[in-house]
Image: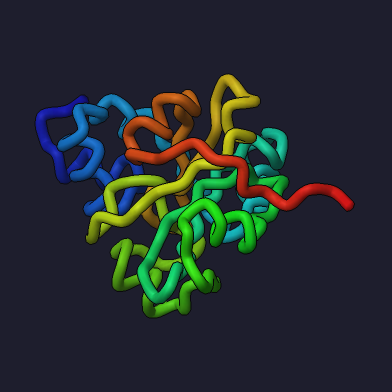
Length: 171
C-alpha cells in the first residue's frame, strides 16, 4: 500500500466510500486485490464473464423492502432470491424489490455496484448459504466497473449477515 490513500483508491478503482469502509474494517489490503474492468459489469453474468469465474462465484448485493424497511440480501450469482422465503425469515407482511432511489439512499451506491458492506446506513443483512459453497466469491467494490475477491465466511462476517436459505428452489 502506498502512503497516499487517495492514490490507492484511484489505483484500485474502488469508490472512495467503499475504499474508506475497507480501511475502517481493517481490510485495506483488499484495495490491492480489486479488479477494474473497462466495461461495466452491472449483472452477475457480466461480472463472471469479465473475471473468468463461475456465475455462482459472484456475490450479488440486493436491496429489498420488508414492510417498507430496507434489507440487504447477499445471493450467489446463479440463483434468484425467493421473496416469500425472505418474508418468512424476517417475519414481514410484505417484501418487494427496493426502488432505485431507495437502493442509492440506503447504500450510497448505484444498482450494479452495491458492495456487501460499507453502506451509508446500517441495514439488516441476510446471506444465502449457497455463498459458502465456494472458496472465494467476487462482489462489487462500489461501482459497476470493480469487483473484489473474498472468502465467503469472511464476507458474511464483515457484512454482519445472518446465514439463511432464501434462494428459489428448482421446480
